[in-house]
Length: 293
Image (cartoon, rainbow, N blue to C red; front, side):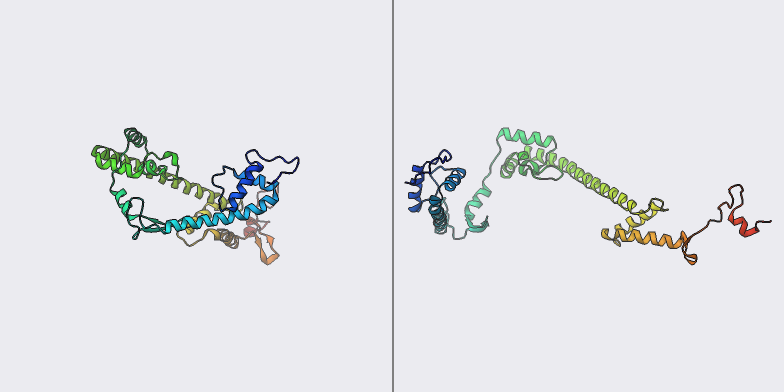
């Protein structure tokens, strides 16, 4: 039996005696099942007993693989399901990486079986429908109008709801009428949410484009409108908006230059500008009549 070093304290629940019995079982091909040892306590004992762990861990891995092979062989060798139906024509599917077989005869029987809701569940379903719930909500947990699935909203299994509606025409009419109204409201909420998001996005685009234009740029709203029209008709991509704004600014500067390139980019002079501080004569007057008229 392995003896713990002096002064070393291990988590409660895995004594040296139990560790010795586990080692004997692992050597015999057993796994951790049946020993009731938590993962944290097992790791702690391994950390404190490296020699024990060096022998146990490889044994555990080999035993686990051997156990999986035995389980797989057991299921592969089955020729009939637990109800006695042949598995020769079973439905084969992959679940979590494992190949599985499902009895198609049992599936057909489950499909024909009418399961019904209890009276308490029926009242819950009716109350939920009256409060605006949809069928998708009460059987799958999908909120009305879309959104992430919430299992707490689920009330009944789909097969039980269908079975109860088939056996109770009054319940079927109630569900049909309530869900038609609730679905219309849910679609309206979804449309409103989409439209609100589109308006928020449009407002964000408006302010972003306005920020690209100089504060004193004339016709800023006209430029933004032209850009929005181009985006809507598909002739302008969102990533090209900045380049289009620069184009409009350059186009405006060509049409209305603020400097005269012929005279060394000197500022242009307005003909309406007063020539003297103490007079009302403008530059235009000088050009048309001269100073001495």
